[in-house]
Amino acid sequence: MGCKSFGVNQMFVDLYRVGINGLHDALKKADESGLTDRAEIVELILQSLASSNYIPSSQDESYRMALWREYLRFKGKDFSEFFSAVDLIVRGEPGEELDRFLQMTNAVFADFELRPVIMVEPPAPGERSPQLVVGNEAVVCGAVGRAQFKSAVQKSFSDW
Image (tube, rainbow, N blue to C red; front, side, top):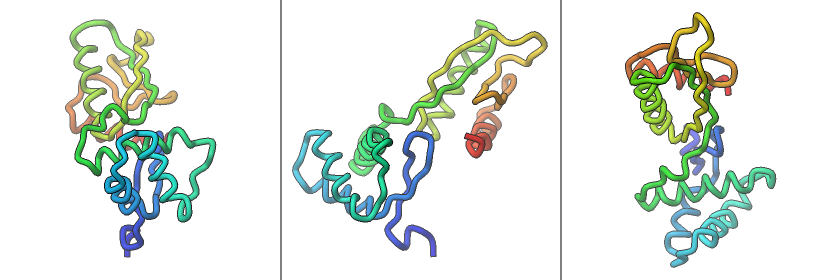
């Protein structure tokens, strides 16, 4: 039996996938509550989840954003404004190739419900350009197709 058999749903909190017990029921309860204020809705969801989930106080704001994103998803609304941010470095020379690479970076990370915060740097001598760097590792080098770019990004997630 998979986790879904026990009422556990997965969601991203920052860059981490976490299991939440009873999420669907909490979202449904919030939807049926008649509340319209974001803070009140999220508080109701948190209260509904409190007895069967551990939510570290140090990550309270991250959970609140993730729960709001899940509520918007539940309602069928656009939640892209609430994607988790991820710091990235893109190295490359200014120009059309770098612009295309930056557009691809944004599009691929959006597929993973992540919002890249990109710092652009010049390439190091002899380095392929453009280049996506996560941490200290080059994840994508040069102009590649979307499928290859997405695959390389997905493989890098386990290193975060």
